[in-house]
Length: 413
Image (cartoon, rainbow, N blue to C red; front, side):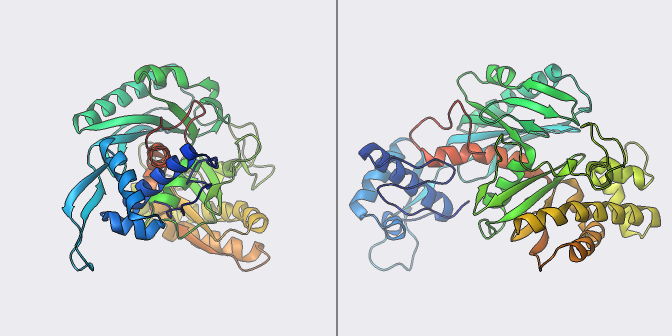
């Protein structure tokens, strides 16, 4: 989870707009601060919390009592041994209470999970999907069924879903649930909200780009999360998306469409792309393109590709070198323009990084005008978009513990 913010009369909590300097706003901010602190560093005593956030023990006790009554915190008994003075009761996020639901619509799969306020996935389901050029209605209907099933299972564990965030491989209109364009699904102008809102009446639904959610998972849930604050996250699956994180926040763009790395041309007169362009990166470094270049048959996937690469099969190594080269060409412009701390590669192709990234590094070395940061593999794996979606709901609860998580405009994506 992200670093805990400092208390004050006016401040921004992670993922939210600035809280106004009013009595209600200050209280909301301080409730969030206490909950973030326990979620990130707990179990902690009241005295521990007070020492970390700079409020008095009396003020913290009042806030803790309110959060405990709401079922957001629980007391575990005496605090950690070895502390000076009489230990107080240790506070922790409970196993029951609010939860975030995340979902992912991939070209080849649907997935849904429920995440508690500690960031732990408590329920998860996934099933294959033939999503290429699919009709939206049946896909959304099936996803809604999976969401209902996961919500019911989560409620059986004492969790209360507070919202649903859905990751999709395409452009999503800012502050809406409308998929403006998802070339690999064949969707255009699809409002995903109604079908999913019907699945969980009263629960707010948010839809966002899968690469953005993957970047948020990397930022907030990766090992040593928060150590990278400026990076480009590449989500390399059948399609290729990217998200730019600057000082711990997503760079969205004027319409919310920033990061379409897969449609950057690497060979301007090259292969036709479903987006309508030619020579797009996806046509050379996307999963299907790499499998085809390696000569694999339908049904053979990344696991087979990795096995053959490890065995030194020449056609596979040549295909991965070509994909890495194309990726490096596209990333060179990004690195020259943005000067990121790191480029992080996630998604299915991250499993092929030992054979893919050397060519990427070679291209960057030859094309970037200055020393550049590290090229790294994602710390959250292929589930990044799904985890990031669920955690965006969790983040909204942590930011506004006693309010209604999220808003009609959605969660902090």
